[in-house]
Image (cartoon, rainbow, N blue to C red):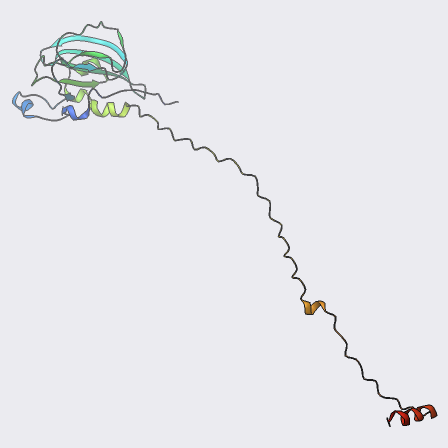
Amino acid sequence: MAERLSDWRMVYDEKYITSHYGEMSAFRRANNMQPHSGTDWARPLGTRIPAIAKGTIHLIQYSDVLGWVVVQTAMDKDGIIWYLGYCHMDSKPGYKVGQKITKGQTIGLLGDSGKSSGPHVHVTASRTLKGVFGVTSDKVDVYKLILANVRVPVKKMPVVAKAPEQAPVPEKTPTPEPEAAPTRAAVAPTLRSPRTRPAVKDNSKLGRFWHLFSGKK
């Protein structure tokens, strides 16, 4: 089964939370009240209250304890329908039961009607309409429920441009080194030493005469 997408939001920033689900404040002890059944956000009187999620207005009524209350239905990421109660409103909202609302739409104005210690909105969550007005055990921690259904935006990874492919560089053919110019000594032909031919003695008559005449013996 495909996972359902929910898109909830916190009523206000967490820094404005004054009391969490299950806490016992001095005010509650003094007034003999049960452990806190929701989450309180304190803001100036008349501050608009944004809807936690899209849904339908299911109930608008006044309670001696919770003051003006608006209950809306909303679906979580698992397809479960929840009843979300906004309590201690300043006045009766101008909605009608069955009217559709969107996330963030003003559902009413923050007040201190009913049994309240000061201007704030008390938000509760239950699987049943009766649970919104019941004991703490009929409810769940609405703060944790919201956190579980806040849609976290997916961060897009930056697209890195792919570097263009470079043509392969052809291998360089080594240039043959020029042959060294032959030295003069290498160019000059090797002169052969003249052979001394042994003197040949001429024993002819003419030869003997020539020797006598030239003085050579």
